[in-house]
Length: 71
Image (cartoon, rainbow, N blue to C red):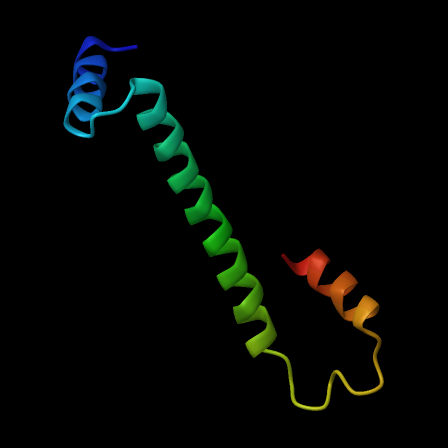
């Protein structure tokens, strides 16, 4: 790891009164949550574009399968 980054990590851990591993874990979790939020937003936007009446007489399973292909 770059010395500059290592120093920043050490300072963050001290300021948050936690370990460097915990700082890294939290950052990874935050980034992962961002990805999940973007995926859910994209799926939601694809639902908004559905034409009215296009889901009539369709099963939930077929709709989920179609959404899975589009996401």
